[in-house]
Amino acid sequence: MKKLFWVLAIALPLGAMMISCEKESLLADEALIEEIAFSSSRTSVAPEALPAEITEQLTEANFDTYVETAFYLRDRGYEVNLGNGENLFFNTEGRLLEFRGTVRPNGPFGPNGPHGPCHRPGFGRPVRIDSLPDAIVAYVATNYPDGEILRAMTRGGNFFVLVSGRIVLSFDSEGNFLGEHSPFIHCARPCREVVAADELPDAITSYISTNFPDATFRFGCDRDGRIHILLLTADGRVLLVFSEDGTLLFQRG
Image (cartoon, rainbow, N blue to C red):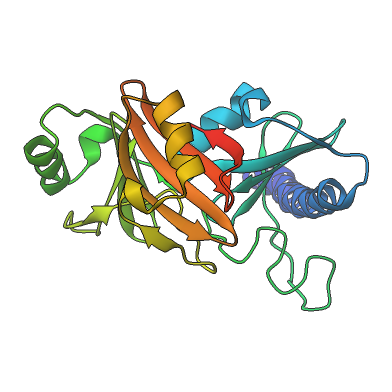
């Protein structure tokens, strides 16, 4: 009986300390996110210059989109803005920061919170390839006989599968094919689809033929005064974003 008393006497305070530390961690996350988001001292960072720990997480759980912009605040962390409208935050060690506080319309982040209007809780959960439903494996083998499933994840009840060549396919929870997933999907700002290369401005057509002569035009779309292009090359996917006059704004893989 005395032994049980001492076990409880030690366990209860430890449990309380763990709960307290978790609450403090969440509060620290929220304060850190706010500091990173609003500091005038932060600097722009090229996606390829992000730390390996962050790049690995993005590759595992966000391969259905791309990094549009990224920022670094010294000794604090990073903000990463994805092409689908999500904003992710990481500390200097690469740990993902999550804002779980109350989002107020008149708060510092506005009605959408720091993670943006397209926030998808969980940021994608990686799935082992050998754990995928048989229907998904069979679909890829039949329709992409030269392709290989490189990565998979679940998000919002659906599966997303990355096939060699950087093609992303989506399936429902039962493994039924939904479609080839566009990296330009945005929850709040839809794209006007460009279905053929000859619909593009001459300046863009010229840029592609000069710099990617052997690439296959997959599709493109026009959104917010920008033209987004998806190409497939021998080395994989290439994402190009142009202004409407044909000036290249940035390129992503």
